[in-house]
Image (tube, rainbow, N blue to C red; front, side, top):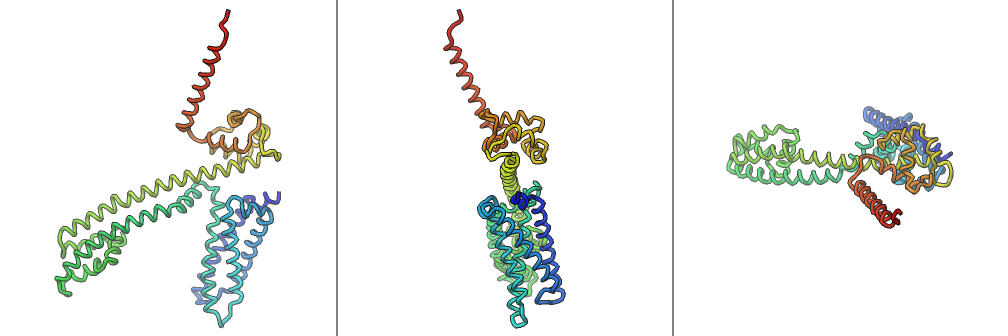
Length: 375
């Protein structure tokens, strides 16, 4: 009971509220110190720091004392270790703030600034509570897993921009060396394509809207060849109409795939949690009586909604999940059965069903052929 209370949702929401309030107070503290040009936070913020530090430390102590194995080895142990390290950093921030002196104010100020920014990372922990909101959970999961596609997209963009920049900078340089520094086109061409780095920045701004591409094309059109203008226009059309759309498609496909994986992982954890709540004994199985007694709970209603079934079909569902017909479901039967019931039948399911029907037909034919003829 003690463990269930400590890991219950009301306490999780209380911790989430404390995390958000702590983040707001850190922002107010930073704003106050910036407006008043202070090197040390005011006393009221130091008191808030001690209060939140004690609160989060108490949270860690309660969870570790409730079940050390669950905290260090159970599901989500990485986030628990992350929380523990953040609490340690918060204690460091409190002690550095308390021990600040005028002689070492600059050193302490630099240390506190780094530690205080690290404390903001505690907001990431709110994802553990926001997993109850499917849309938010999917967005957070998709953002967290999109770094690999982002890296690939950035490499492609950099490659295209680099090639175009090398050509345009070389072209502009060929025209600028034949000009006088007082000529009309000398300075504009130098501003946009005076170096490879500057040319890459110009092309990036022209593609993303940070710079009007017509303004970039104007000196090319007036002082260089039509070929350079045509290539620049091709770059704008290719990047806006093809490249960026392809990158968006890759991101959308990745987000949809990761969102489906997140829903599947969440359903697995949710089904395991429902099974533990229905289990009345330590036999690690649930009977029809246990199943029926839990039908009115919100957890079972959400489970039937997740597998696209009506709760009035509960008895039929139980019979389908009970593959060995022993009147009880173990954890593996319950989990694998719920996952199979979710969504439409797959091609593999249809093929397995056809194979079983064919096997049954063969057995029936063999029995009919082996039966003695009627007199």
